[in-house]
Image 1 (cartoon, rainbow, N blue to C red):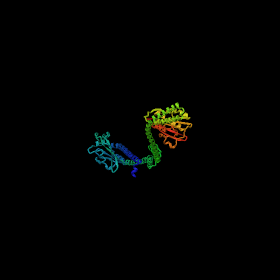
Image 2 (cartoon, rainbow, N blue to C red; image 1 turned 90 degrees about the horizontal axis):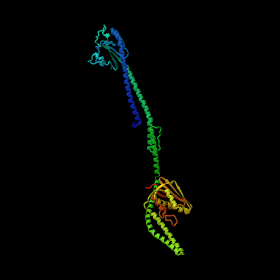
Image 3 (cartoon, one colour; image 1 turned 60 degrees about the horizontal axis):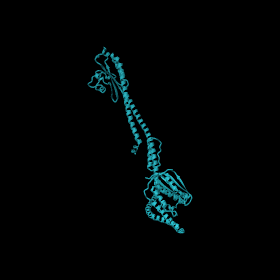
Image 4 (cartoon, rainbow, N blue to C red; image 1 turned 120 degrees about the vertical axis):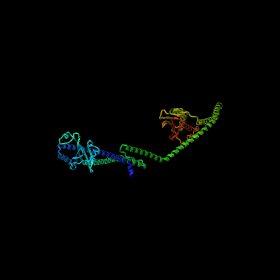
Length: 526
């Protein structure tokens, strides 16, 4: 549990900032305390200098006239002031000649003592010692003391006075030693040190607390929301969304999370829906495969039948042409020589008509079996439809049927064999005319462009196609017409032409009110 707490980003940031603050305030406290010590020490040093100068000036007059009692009184009075530990005057051989403590008079000081070794070494003379730094700080019974050595120079008034026996060659006559206590200074420093440390600790705690609160609100709470969102998403709740209240980096992350969850939800629903409808899709694909298989079987049948038709057609074509030719020739001769033989002529005409019908069957077989390589060129399908309609214009006029053209595009070019496309269009329109069974009405041809394909619809107003015949109408020799001239190869030929153009033909709809044939052709052929 403790490890999990310390692994949190907000806790780590809080600890780092607290550590940085502690280091900064520690350095700051150290610098402040050192500066305070130096300033107070400097202040006490200046106080010692001032006190020493006051003593020298106060005793100068008495020194000239050798008024020792006055000098003793001045030194004793100043030496008894609060904070003053001692005031002494040493001659140049180190003997105390004046002191606030009368018990020290005429004693020779030990220059190796703690109070003296700051300025003296064992081999130094008096004149060399007083040229050194005259300030010393030392401890006596756990009390810090500041001592000041102020040299007493041999002035002209001193070596010319009648009462003194000083040589002019002596540069210094002695020193004035003032020692003051630094107890008050240490108390101030310690008090200031405690105050500064307390204030630093207080500031560290306050800033750390504010930073911790800030991180909790700005970092920890949004991260908890993100964590909860991830947990909900992991448990499968794809509809869960994080509430976004800010535009910072965490707010952007939350927005991205919501967008990701939305897309996951959509994908999951699609997969679920697809899974639920899998059986239906399998059935649809199965039916589609069956249709494709049926088309393949039909194409194989047509291919085999095409080869057979070519052979049969070539074998039958020549004798049929001979029968037709000789029957017509014989009919003409009988008409010319035996005009009374009407029954014979009627029989010969019947032979001619049947031979002609056999010829048409052979012709359709030849067209059906024609498998030479198609040569595709770029053609305008609208122009091909208009040309095919023009070729069978008399069929429309004879049957009193109106041809209606509905072109969504005026110019739609496809790669095709124009003669075969015309043949297929003519066959479809003639088939539509025959489906009308003499009924006056209209046949509509529609052309449109859909998703890179050309769509052609031929719509008649005939009696429609029976449901049992729809699956067989494109098979060779299958016909629903009672007309003896029907060969059953028309739609099979159309089917083959459309297949050779990588297209598709189908009965889009049929009813007693009419039938719609739909041809789909690609716009480009490679």
